[in-house]
Amino acid sequence: MIIALFGYAGTGKTSLFEILSQKKTEIRHHQEGRIELPKAVCQVPDERLDWLCSVYPEKKKVPVHLELVDFPGISAGEISTNQYIAQLRQVDGLVHVVRSFQNPAVTHPRGHINPVDDIRAMMEELILSDLVMITGRLEKLEKDLKKLKDTEAEREKALLEKIKPWLEEGRTAQQLQLTPSEEKMIRGFCLLSLKPVLHLINLDEKQLAFLDHPEELLTGLQPDLPVSAFCGKIEKEILELEEEERALFQGMYGLTEPTASRFFKKLYEVMGLIHFYTIGKEEVRAWVIRKNTPALKAAGEIHSDIEKGFIRAEVLKFNDLQKYGSWNQAREAGAIHLEGKNYPVQDGDIIYFRFNP
Image (cartoon, rainbow, N blue to C red; front, side, top):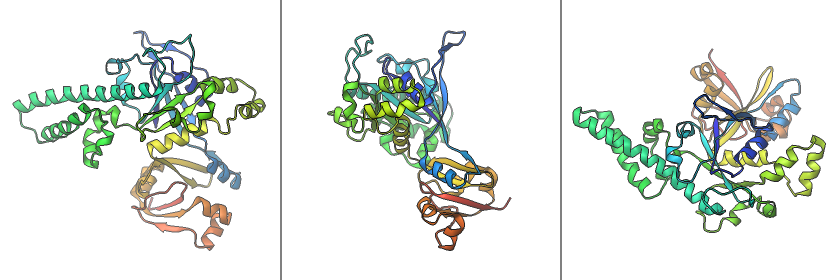
């Protein structure tokens, strides 16, 4: 999965990227002058996988990795014409980095520091970008349908005419709650306002008290918008320390949890992601899927042959493995359940898939 870090210029996106990837960003340019977008494959912290590997130390540990892309800062009002808009549309999730810190040397593109205003303005820009795209497509469809009747084009036109007034009212396509068939039809448009968005507030050092509840800083913000926070300045300083010194400085600042751990927990919540696990002959592995993914599709994440030849899934809850200590003891206690292809996989399930090769 690909996650975009984006936002207005000077918000600390690159600092966040370096904190999560634990590497310095190198800016490279294409021949035509475009910036080569910095990318990093980041390991998702997983305490359950760590525990499983302590039980099976002879097996290789294979965690989940997500790809992060650091997009250049956006000028106010330019997202619809931004040269990277097509690439932004291709990602699976959006992390909007929002400035709350004070720094007279860094000018804010919108002239003042107000996280609530920035969140509202950016959501409006995402919606406007989708509206421009849909309006253009509708105009083309209307011309084409005057020349030739096409049932699929008629269905597409009807769906776009349903979405367009919704966007014109300033609401996201995600709020429209499209049916599965409508979502499938519109998928190719890669609407920005249909993607999950996490608003991540880059706090000032004096605002650390709001680290675990940043919504208290955002008076008047729509309550259902997901928000989290970090302090880029302090986190980068800690990152530059030797490993043994980091915990000491985290304690001094009252940082009980690293940014990466807090970030991925909230991102998973916003994107509706969960982990399930497999214990093979040679490896213990975590897999990432969407909530309520049926066992058949979860099997396909491992290998298409397992999905095609699916017979059943033997499922053990993570807490039950902790309770009984081993797979065999859990089986003897009756804690392992046999599930069919439509079983909705739950977060933390440990699964052994039986299939016809």
